[in-house]
Each structure stands twice: as C-alpha cells, then as structure tokens.
Length: 205
Image (cartoon, rainbow, N blue to C red; front, side):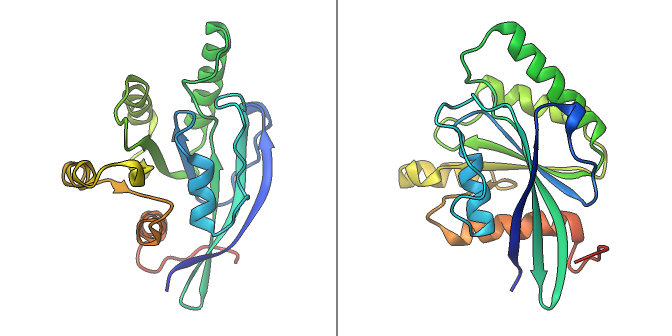
C-alpha cells in the first residue's frame, strides 16, 4: 500500500531571499488563512504536530519546508512539502499585504521544482474572491509540468446534502475530512501520481 513513512521539518524562510535550494520535486500548499493547511499536512504524514499553525490566523509569514518519504511496495520516493503562508486574514496594513504577495509571487515564479499545487478551500465557503484570485495567480505562472489540485477541507462540517452537491460539482477536485482516512489516502495517492506516475524513480531514498 502506498503511504508516507517518514516526514521531517527542514527549515523555515522569511522571504524568497533565504529559502532552501530545491533538491526534489515539491508540493506547495496554498490557501487562505484558517483553511486548515497545517492540519491537512499533519494528517497526510500521520503526525500530530509536524506542521504548526499560529494561534492568530494569518500572523505567521513563513515558508516552511518538510522532507517527505513515500513508500510504494518496497521502494521509497522523496519529495518536499512546502507550506506557504496563509493569506487574506491578517490584520495588517495594505503595504505589508502587498509586500507579502510580491515576495510569494517571486518565490513561486522561481520555483520550477514545484510539481503540484494544492489549492485549499474551505468546503463551507468555497470560491471566495481571494480563492479566485489565488487560482488566477497560479494559472498565470505555472508551467506545463505543474499540476493544480483543488482540495476542499473541513467537509465534515457540511450537511450530508450539501456534501453530496459539492462532490457532484467538483468531480475533478478532492473533498477531504480529517475524520475520513479514505479521503486523506486519496489525496496522498493523487499527489504521488502527479509526481511519479504508477511507479516513478528518484535519486536518493
């Protein structure tokens, strides 16, 4: 069974100027603040507190890197999860927000090593203006070998009827709940397949 067998924090960066050099294919987690990025990363890697969220949504402006090892049968495959700062919530000046957005854009444009973008949206409030803007941003800068996967979080907060409507409408997306291990496993497999295919190879293990 495909699984993530090891996950470790590598480093944090305060801007594009001090990020780590890319070494493996990367998966970028992008979404507005309080969408559940840290919780989703922890669920994917089966760790309770690998990724930590700020007590004040939108306050942390760090780019966090995590070393991730997948195991498919007896072979191991390495990738890096990139936890990007949440956006759209912090009570800061317009100038600060513009500086953060500029720094993030510079990082994403220069990071060809990103092979998968996970665009996270709250299943209860999808496609807010800031979500639409983020999608346009990624579409405008991504390369042909970079994939966007829309992920709807907190689906367990929906009524059953609303959940069914969302799943029917978003057939190309992934609807997840931290209480539903099958949805988490589906996302693990989707990430893996976009980087390695059925059985890819990568230097190092």
